[in-house]
Length: 232
Image (tube, rainbow, N blue to C red; front, side):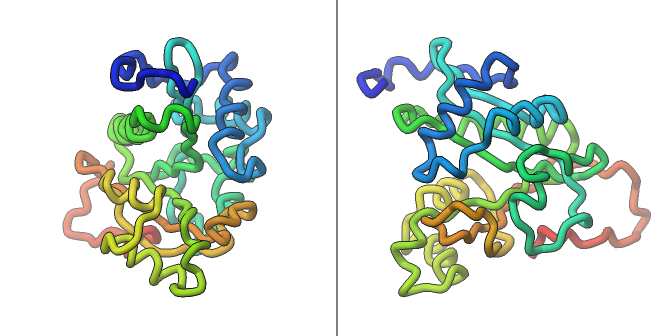
């Protein structure tokens, strides 16, 4: 993989919905993508995600080989406290909490094989997720983003202070910096979000991208809509 000439081959990346015969490859990509393999979803979890919400499960294929994927579900913001964990909001990764009546697409995973990160695969997966949000007329995309460089600065900054330093571009974080560049806004810091994420010290950043094309199902007629738990 490392010998690929990325500058000439990027046109062969295809983003599409996950199929049953992709799952074994996706599991291997996820294990390779994380510094802690325990974070990766199992095949049973991926199977459940596909069964419950197939439209929300996307993958990236390069010349017929799996190189990335992302998973999501739909949630009602009022069903969850501002502070929540990935297991709570995703039904332990099985998407049993998926609610088609919700207004928010909640991203629970984005993985890209390390050998293909120069090809902007992550950006393309995020772009497809934004398209899905628009197609389903959902209000926003929300997720808890990792901060894998935080462990290097934990003796200098609280999680909130670290996040603000990255937002001001005083510090670099490979995940948070990428998400900010992709138009996501910081909505807060989550504690004990992902139990195996030692690099982030189990913290995550609640991020949101608001759908500019969202149209409420009912006209408010001057009534104030309920404030989102995901908003500041």
